[in-house]
Length: 277
Image 1 (cartoon, rainbow, N blue to C red):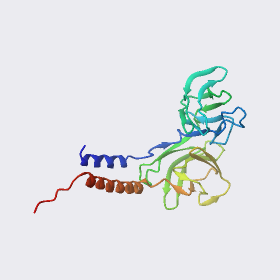
Image 2: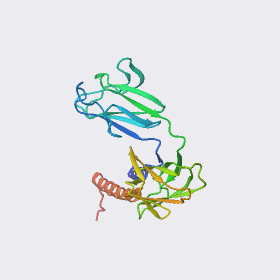
Image 3: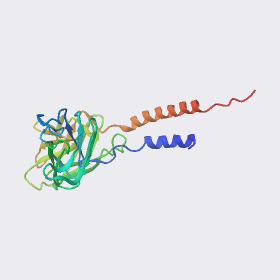
Image 4: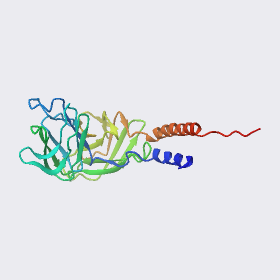
């Protein structure tokens, strides 16, 4: 490949739209295998980063990933099945060393028990549930912010419809427009906000009035914001620490570095012929 081809390839790689169309449907949850887990007398053998649970039990949804990270000094396996009945053939990490990990995506609902073949007292269960049919989706949130290519599908549960979501980058805020009549007497809005879309929701406004009794629950890469509203609410604004990142500026910086590196490499590897006088 000539220099021009390499340069074109560099630009193409830099401008691949990272993080496009991220959706709540796929999350990754980590279970740590702590130091000392190989000892049957250890106080616990697993620790979930999702909620701190140390029983080896974790609840996820279909299409979510679970990643087991080995922080122990001994090698382990994560094998589906039970110590009594053995491996059931669904998944098996094989033996993985300290500092390594094993990840599996769950594509069906059900209870999936697992254990370590080497240390069978290490046992747990992954409980996989269907996505709630009550959840609705606001697609492509962030298409008019940042680089315009990093978008998110925001899920929510509400008795009415959210017609649009507008991002104000200057205020680190997202405004949701509500339309339609309520389908029930429960006017509580539950918004599943990806942390990469808006981080650390701090303030909530409803129709120009600040709401103080909202609740936030963090789970994986999502902040669930629960807001009590009324049947006449029309606009919700959530202010966070930051909103969808402006990848465009980052890409330009990376491109500049790449260009200078390319030029430097070209001059280093090729001799420049000077005309003879």
